[in-house]
Each structure stands twice: as structure tokens, then as C-alpha cells.
Image: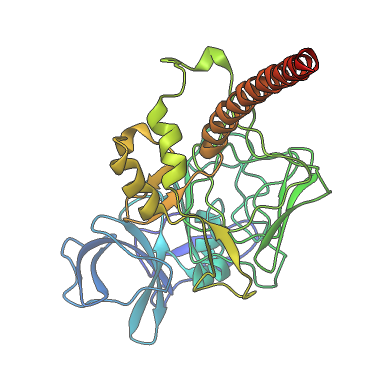
Length: 350
């Protein structure tokens, strides 16, 4: 229903309404911003307002936004942005009409509490209090500001029938991550993200692996698996002698973490000392993946990289021990032979 004049009498089938008072809700376009308020040009007027109006928390206007404004005394408050698809210029509306015009976006009550903006908004979003349960699988983009659950654990985004294709966010605050059929995979409580059942979930697969995983402690029901497929490797060579020499220059230490809470003693290496030892034996850091330097300058160690070096050194020592064993055995046999010859010589002399 469109009014060309605020005092026009509108005849309906149900009742006759005389509009004599100024409209309680008006539509306008933002023309400029200053000190946390906005100047607007009301629909039906040719000049922008000289007065600047406040807007509700959760909505930050930009120039050219089409907005709904609620009368408060002798001024207006900007409720939020409206899509161009659902408004017609050059008319004012009463508050009772706003709910009809904004039916696919916000009720008047919702508008006072939150601000939602949806590009290409259609009838699949009711705009009431069901929080996107009708959004469906349409290829729409949606941004949310200032919306949160009023009671802990009561706000859902999507359901088993209507699901989000993807979510991009800087923070996630939820109690569970679920599969498409609603089964909980990870539960999130008190700073923990735990599998719903023991050994019941994986992060990544053999073909889609995580690039990096940073953690102080990792609890596993089994052993970690490192990718080691020959088909994924190149420049394969026998371990150079300098890597074995590096092992003898390492300085194992015990230590405690400054930010640790258990007070327990750990054992390991100091990454900077490993870096220096590598330099001493002629190994550049690019050729030693055991030492990691992060972008922020922090050092780290991949301890599993030392397993192959330790294995090579143990193998070398085992071969040396076997050679020494063979030499000692041979020498022992010769000594025994000489002993028997000496005995025979003594007998012959007698």
C-alpha cells in the first residue's frame, strides 16, 4: 500500500484509516556520516536533512544505504538497511506497514535488536526469530552483525534439511561440530575440542593433509602417521657423513617450560644449539628440516627427523662391532694355535 500524502484517507475492505499524524516509520537514503551519526534524504523529499540521526548498535551505515527510520519524539533512530527490491521511493509508511514491507528481512521488534543484511534475499528467509532455518541450500551470501544466542546453547545456524555450503569467520563459539545427518563429531566444552567418541574422528586424510599442526600436547589412541610414500619423494640419497657427525655434536638437556602448569621436567634439545651444531659440520639450515624457524622468529624442532640419523649411526656402530668381533675371534683362534705349537715344541725338547 503506497501513500502519496500523509493525510490521505485509505479505504480498505476491512476498515478505513485516517492518517493525520506524522508517520512513525519513514524510509530514507544515507547521504553523509559524521561523529557516529548519519544525515539522510527522506523518501519524498528533494533535499538531504541538515540533522544527523543516531543508528542502532550492530548496524554501521554507509552512504547510499536505504534505511528504515523509527520516530522517537521529535527525532528519528535509524533501524537498519533495507534492500532496494522491496521499497518504492516517494512515500512514507506507518509502523504497521513496515512489517509487511520488511517481511522477508526483519520484524520491527527484530530491527530494534539486531541488524541483518542478505544479498539476493528471497522468500526462503522468513526474517522472524528462526535464525536462518529456512535459508536452504541456495547460493546466497549472508553477513551477520550483532546476532547471538539469547540463552546459551539455543542458537542454530541451519539444520539437517537446510545447511550452509560454507562458513567464513574469525571466531567460532559453539558446543559441537556435526555431520550432515546431525551426528556430533567433535564436542567443544571448557576450552576442549574432543571427539564425540574415543578414536571416533579424524582431522585430514591421507590425500588431504593438514599443512601444520601446532600444539603443546597431543593425545592419541595410537601412533602418529607421517607421510613417507616413495612416490612423493625425490632426490633420495644415502645419508651423508656430516649428518652422522651432527649427532655427536648435539647436547641433550633437561628443562621446564616457563609457561608450563605442571612443573614437570622435560628432556630434549635446544633448537638454536642444533642450528649451531649443523653449521659447525657444514649443514645449511635449508638442508636440515629438523630445525624450524617460524615467521615470528620462534624456533622449533621436528624430533622425528633425528630417528634416521640415529639409525644410521647405530647401524655404523653395529657393523664396526661385528668387524671387531670377527677380528677378535680370528686373533683368539691364532693365539690358541700358537699355544698348541708352543706345547709341542716343549715336548720335543724334552
